[in-house]
Length: 274
Image: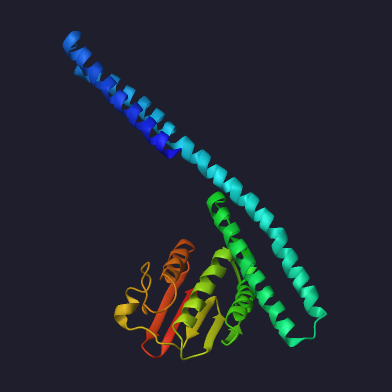
């Protein structure tokens, strides 16, 4: 598809350029046209019409391709929703009739995997909405969102202790995007806290603070921490894009972001909402 598009654009551009040169030669050499300004106006008009046609030729196939991908993504998401809900519902029903500890652990792992699939489903749905909807902000309670994310992360990190002190705070923001930000910050804190199992989370006066007690960072690392692909510990899992995504989201949503860290004392990240 794109090979043919490239060839078509090249052919059209090639013959259009030859046409302009021929028109210029014809007016200047054959007709000995003396009004240069009129000639330039004619050529400019032809160039504008040619540019419009080339842009249409180039954009329309891409637009059609993107629309097809969007349509396919929405249909796929719709088809995924039912099996995920079915697995979760039946797993929960089976666990009620089980007493064997090993079977309960197996069921628990299936349910945890289903929750992770549902999370990926929600993220895909969110990505589609961000590309098709201009306004995705909504009213919600930030403390409820934090608790929801902690419940999800606790299943992934059962050995970690999350200490919460949350006030009731209502905000107007991108709920799903903010949930991803909270996940990234906490996941990053856990990743670099190999010697500590505690994550403190405070919410007061529209200030959300997430504190870990891991390896921390020095001043030179703090200057690079929001750079894409930067990792303070190259042995840690991941690609170093978590905090760069956090920074980009906060800038877009006018959330003030601050980070305070010291080596061997941990890292504190604070989100300040208007």
